[in-house]
Every structure is written in C-alpha cells, then in structure tokens.
Image 1 (tube, one colour):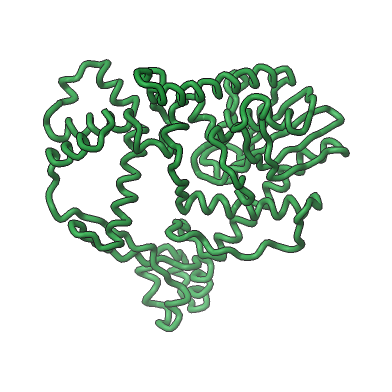
Image 2 (cartoon, one colour):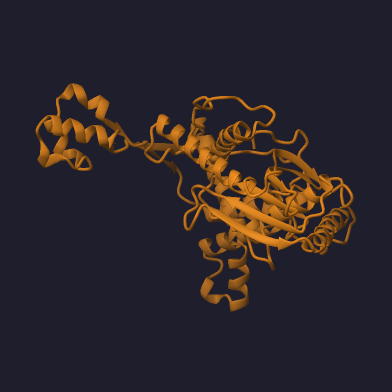
Length: 400
C-alpha cells in the first residue's frame, strides 16, 4: 500500500485468511522480516497511482493535479513485452478505471463520503486487530457501507459468498463499523482487480447489517485461538494445541521456515526421491496427508530457489550459471508495420514474422524496431544430487 501502517499488526486483516485457519502461524512468524518481491512492489506502485486519481476526483487531502509522474518498474519485474512507457500507461489506465469504479458507488448518494487508505481497528476485541483499507464509501441515504479492495495481481481474488465472504474485506468492514461508529443497513464488499484472469474486473457481495454482529463474534473467536496458540507454545507439553494447520494459506506465511508441517512435507518428498519410500507403498491416507501440505512444501521450495539465486549472484562455490540470450522481437509492432509499408513491402506487413521481414528494412533502423526478450539464466549445481546428505541436513535443522 502507499501508506502502510508504521506498526504492523500481528493479526493483520490482510493475513486473516491465514491466521484464522492456522493460529500458530502468527507466533512462528514473529520476528521474521517482511520481504517483498517485484510483483508486490508493482502492486504498491499501482495502488499509489490509483490513489492519485481518486484523491484528485474527490478533492481529498493530498490531492495533486495532472497525471502522476512516471515511475520505474521494480528490479527483476517481468514487463511481459511492454516498454517502460507502455507499462506506465497501463498502470495509469487501470488507476483511472479504478477511480471510475469508486465513483460508480459514490454517485448513488449525493451525500456519499469517500475515504482512502484509512486505518480501521477492533480494539474492543483485540489490540492487534487493525489494518489499512484501500477505500471506504459511506452512503448515508441508504445507510450502506461499501468496502473496496484494489487488487493488482494476476491470481483471481474471490469476493466470496454470503456464507463465506472474503476474510480480509469482512474484517475491514467490521472494523470500519466500529472505527467510524456506523450503523449500516447494508454492507457491500467489493474487489476491483483490473488484471483478473477471468471474468469482469469488479466483484460485489451485499450483506445485511445484521451480518456485522455475527462476523464480529467470529473474528473474536479467531483472535482468541491465536492467543491460545501462543500460550501453548510457551507452556511445555501443550504442543498439540499449537500444531500448524497447513493449507493454501501457507504460501504467504513468514513462519514457514520453522513450521513442522513444511518440514514434514519436505522430508516426505526427499524420502521418496532417495528411494527410502515409494508413493506406491503408501496407503491412501498417507498420500492424502502428503498432498494436503503441498502448498507448504511449494512455499518452502520457492524460498530455496530465491536463496539459490542470491548465492549464484554472489558467486558461491558449487553453483554455475548458464545464460541464454532472449529472442529478438518487435519493440513496437505498429511502427514496424508502418516501416514495412513505407518500404513497399506489403507482403511482409505481419510484423510477427521478424526473421523474414528484417532483411528488407535498412540496418540503421533495426535498433529502433527490434529488441530482445529478457535473457534466461539457468543455475546448475556442480555436484550431482546427494539425497542422503540432504536428508542429514533436514535431520540437523528439523524441529521434530
């Protein structure tokens, strides 16, 4: 977000989908620094640009005229064939569309109030229950609270159903009711995701005002479970209460390096690879158990790959890198088409056929028309795999 909380909540609303399912994850994550990749950094930039247009449209504090300044993409971000200028245009275009989406709610009530990047909390339940919501719209005429979340990733974010609404948005809504001292008749949870892989970019879910009390009790129970897990970790002999619960939420858990579920998944996969165990020898219950922690193991392996990339950059012994130059491609297909037409080569007006068309274009124009895709780098271990040695490493660092 463009205005993150100075103090990060242990029971963050953005992480509720995780800690509500695995209470011990909060304590396993304690003291582990936040690490954001290029995709997360792109999301932060997208939020700032979208916020610029909304503040400008509703004359909110901090509003600045004109377009936001051009920004540089995060290091190692895949621009998916776009130039930096085109990428900036995309960020701005999506920001303008998001602003129009917010306005679509605000225009329904002449007295509507729009609030951006506001910290909301539930201190009456727990001191650590707080977070910063992207956008809140209060329509006093219909007594409707609209909670809007701007998601810039490619993974489909579901607004949920009446029976199971989006956990993050639900927490924002309940906290907004307490923070702003509202008595809504209706709650609208909305997700705006301009790069959503399927379906429209906008999703809405309408809930009755009575839902707030039910969801509030649910959040209180979840927070109580987190505190109980912390107490269990501090008291000898109560590890069962604080056992990790693996699932899709493991992917973004900072405590996965210390998680016994992650370690168990890694050891099981390693044992199969080393020949100590065969999937065919496992019964159905065992196979399902291994499969159930697949997300935890995937997250662990992503951490390993990230560490390997860093070690390769540092020139660590035992690793070599192989670089393959990216393929040539048109930097601007439209300009390439116009160039070929100007040269009278109507037969080559399909700029995608670069190999055939390029010889017909003067060499001094090649640099303006052609670029290369990003080079691919392959990291290779100089020694062959030694499952036995890796198994010993797992045994050395395992908590169990």
